[in-house]
Amino acid sequence: MTILRKKRILLLSEGFGTGHTQAAQALAVGLRRLFPNLQTRVMELGTFLHPTLAPLVFSVYRKTIVSQPKLYGLFYRSQAKKTLNRFARLALHRIFYRHTAEIIEQLKPDTIVCTHPFPSAVVARLKRAGLSIPLCTVITDYDVHGAWVSDEVNKYMVSTEDVKQKLMLRGVPGDRIEVTGIPVHPNFWQPNNREELRQRFGLKDMPTVLVMGGGWGLVQQEELLLHLASWADRIQLIFCMGSNEKARNRLENDPQFAHPNIHVYGFTREVHKLMDVSDLLITKPGGMTVTEAMAKRLPMLFYTPIPGQEEDNCNYFTERGIGEQIVSFETIDRRFERLLGETGSASRTHRVYWPSMQTYDPKTCHQAIAQMLS
Figure 1 (cartoon, helix red, strand yellow):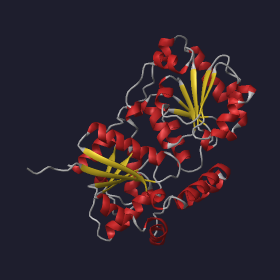
Figure 2 (cartoon, helix red, strand yellow):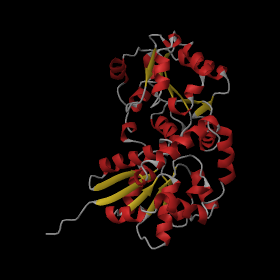
Figure 3 (cartoon, rainbow, N blue to C red):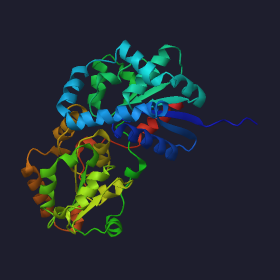
Figure 4 (cartoon, one colour):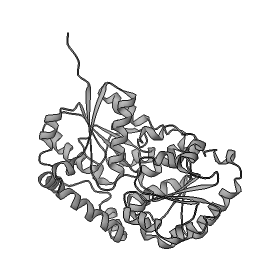
């Protein structure tokens, strides 16, 4: 009797920020949950091939964004309409990815899914040289940079119809593009019980605001942090500082944040639960974070979007009334007063339903990738 092996999906990402790899992990877990007959493998390709060099590159990238956001924005915009040229692809291959073909040969995937443009460009180069494995590229923002575009991509999964139209203007055939929304982890698919979460996290039944972004600039927003803390008598605040332990320790040891209604967290795998117990999210508009909040139907305020993809994400959500950019402290005060006006636990458990969310199903991207295999 012949035993058929499970179909294999190789998901390639990179460590430029956290969102790209989060998307790959979300796909991997969701695919296995929806389709137990599939095998998935997530790999940050550059880190795997260059465990010493890649973290240094990512660190420089991160410091540049935090310290010189305008410079980064100028570079991003100058290249936005250009695909990676032949020289750039060759340089990526020679410096970082020259052993990629060996990895693919060893793992023997049935489909390759990329959630970052660099591994997508490298696999596209291998396809030009004869690789026959289907390549799917998942664009993890609400706009499209030219670096994502390669003729050899068999299927693009994109966030919105607008992104699809922009890809088509760049010459990508419409039948190669599927509007699926950005995938999120299954943790964000269903709500949790708010009362149980309050008890677990030691929270009061009062208006609650989740503040995220410690690793990417929140720690630089001293005046913003202090203004938020000034509301602690009336608004419960959850500060999620991510992997920035220095920022977390600073807040925990600062007497201005020593209030029973202020809760400080570092890295946590329970962001989905913190979103469920909150009434408003204050965050930088990274593609994954805003999509997770949208899946939870959680209203958002955005602070200091980085010029480039975060600015594009911010514009998309504010234009559709799903979020609002903080232009002054008055934006925060007005929104907090509105929260306080929504008296009673029952009214606060009502989640908003935006018209533009009607077509968003967090499982769609997973199902589309599984369909490619069939």
